[in-house]
Length: 568
Image (cartoon, rainbow, N blue to C red):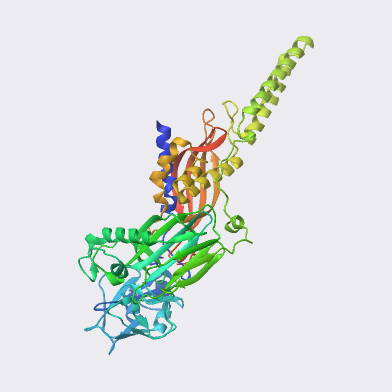
């Protein structure tokens, strides 16, 4: 088992639009950077302390299982994995706890359970590193209490003592002071500063929110399944109302982008839909709020007002085109401030992205301008043929054959360089020119869906589609550009990898079979990850009012391109 990281034309057009809008929804998953690569990790061990014991989940990569088999004479693969799991970790309270292997068997993955009779004040976690390294020298051991990670991206390298806080699992911690979270409080805030928008994100526990507002919960400790939607909605609206961000002394308009239940791990942060009763102290909600700006402001202030007896400091991490900036707010100093120090940076060059723009029809894009040349050429050759035959007595065949060869050569030259036929109204785009046109038109669509406000989205859509299609395209498909875990993908590049003109000899001249690569990044909750997908479609282009537009897209297929060095 590999580690889980973490009219007809209009109808055809909209089928294609759904395909384009699915780029992002299939484009990214919430795989976040822990600094360990897929090819490095052989064994992942996740230790989670729950109310009545400790669950130890062991995931073995295929190469780890292969190594175990090669080093052992045993032919029973299942038995070999079970024996490995039983040796991997030992748990001690006042004494060493007995373990039992859970019956659920997943290929390459097992769960051991260590039961205790009463909740201990501390637990000693004792990995057997010699046993673990038999499956490979690269491994990942993570620890959580009630699903909340005790450390952000910690890899245990020795036995450690975990001090338990049974009243509030967030505050369980290792005795070793080196093993701790970057964010010590159950509230985290992030600010993303981009040329077109500012986005603020807050991760907070339901337990804190219940102290700041009335969630209408019927239980003080848990959330029942029928309460999940209401709780999420109330938290989103409350944090939107409390969001106080200004740019250059002007309060920004805040737009609630989305609210999700999220869970944190050592290697990932994912949005999820809880199915069973949840502990308020272990349930996190993430809220994303966007603020439209025309350009990066000179100054941004975020006034924070949410504190309580235990939360007296909230860390805020800001990301701008030059990097990241860490600070914090307190009840005494509640304003986070960011100053623009980007004056000496070439932001377009730094971001490396092309701009949204229309694609004008160039003279060489259409064959009409060559028709007059062919007509003149044919007329001249006919005149020469007539003169040669009538006045010089030359046989018609001796004059006509060269004339046909000359005209045929001219047609062939134009077909190779500007299209495949001069018999229609237009010759069609050459494939090299079509690559340039398509790349920009697709880029415009992606940029439209990344816009924070509808007006900006419509402006960018107008570069690629006609006006009567813009509203449906925006309203039906913008949300699909948000991935399943809540991250908004930032498209960095589009490359046309293969393109062939498949238009018939007669009729529409600009129908292409096209494959293109989309490369992008997701960044939220303080993490960034790259994704690449390859898409295949048949695309029809038409000139409208002097500009190229996509009229139809017929999807053929799509495939995620996986880099083995991708970080988990």
